[in-house]
Image (cartoon, rainbow, N blue to C red; front, side, top):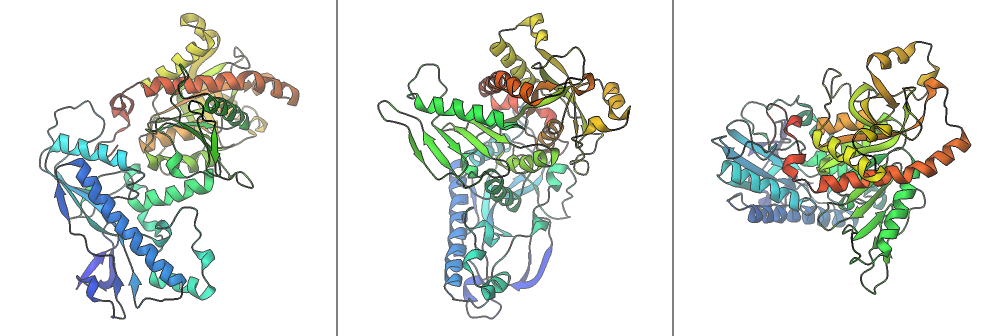
Length: 526
């Protein structure tokens, strides 16, 4: 017998577990595992990925089969358990042939590992990470069954409701039979730079453990109304429904064009909440739509212009406020997107600005407060040159203003984000003085949060806002004025965002994923 570690940080479970689980079927404290799969070493990324997929598939099939039997009234003698696959590497040398890349290597010799989940969804990503590790450090990848249990809720389809099929007595028995989600295994210590590996335990290989990823995948379905598999590698966030309306209009027009139309991006489908999929017309074939719209929109609906290689565009309406901005970026981060950009409206703080002018953020005043514990205020949030250049170039492309003339419509500067929607009502001088001292040129409620979480999770970020009012100078949004302004500006602003992503898409991922987002002892996985 041995004592089993319940999580990668080394916590010990006092329930003894036999070395031969298949011989325990009649023991009152038996733990029923899937058929054993031995650990193996690989020097090829594709075969290593295939082994991960085989381990995960066996684990999920085991849990689902036992759950079906449990629902049917068969109570197994003991616990049912399946564990996540792990990848483990032993690094003897950190000498690399190419020091320009921001990921794919470790900083010091040692043993590194991480749990893995959804190798179907992350197949391309995992293959790329495996290849880089082998190229940069040589050696082998050890693929094995880990010791972190897969919670039952993470083994079923994201839209399934386990408890809804169970009686009250079965719901009470569930915890005694299956492993349920354990929040202690899902913290963000690795990403936050606060994780300390216990003596003798492997060092982390990725920012997120498998349970943390699974948790976010289920949350994404809940908050956005779409399956995580539809999310694309370039993400736009907005705080107004007007942008969604225009995005849907553009997407539907694209879908109606045959895929051979000259000059159109190679978008294959458009996905809306409820997993409503509209596939692009092809030749003489008409547009085809499947899925069912939800009875009501989710809290932060997502819309996806899909490319086969996931290099399309996802737009999420995060609504108003930094809490929403943090929530959705916490979860999208596990998908490891190539970039996310905030497109929204802001208050212009300078008298020289006009309604409809654009603001390209190169710094942030963080008065949103939602990330103060995870990312202290003394941490700078730097602009990323690749994203800044793409956004500025996109404004020039769409407005046809170039060089010095571009300053007529675009201003670069500091954006302040506040969690107080009625900041204008605070006693004078209140925040006005602070914003002036910070050289802020615009104010909103979400941009600093989106950028700070991009910094925290190593996701390239940017912000391009549009001035919709100037409260410090008496220019407030009145209903009639606002409607006219939105009609005029939203279409152009959105086209600028799409153009910026087209520019970013042309760059190599090695350039886009900047080294300036990496910490001293950075994990290898991007």
